Length: 114
Image 1 (tube, helix red, strand yellow):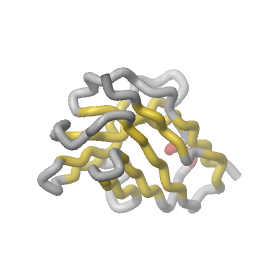
Image 2 (cartoon, rainbow, N blue to C red):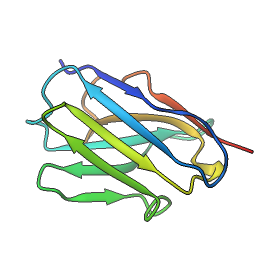
Image 3 (cartoon, rainbow, N blue to C red):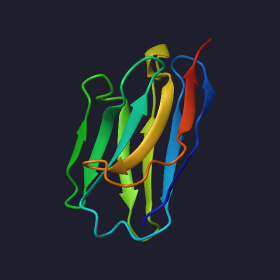
């Protein structure tokens, strides 16, 4: 079973940037699609950005043009570069497959506030 460990979150001012990392304990090469999800307080978890082994990426409308997802299969790692952060981006961020069939990691908290 693949274990997922997210990192890179923190407190950032509006307009700032963060880079999240998701390290997998096992090979993710065979998993066709990986994604970043987020869950804000009182809200359901939502897919933020996805990446496929063929290089195809997709983004939620709310983050298009600001977030960039990438993957390094050799390092079993998925990244999320976030820029121009807004207070509404505040949430716990998780990575998982698409659909999310792996055991969820602990997530990493992103707080956007002045």
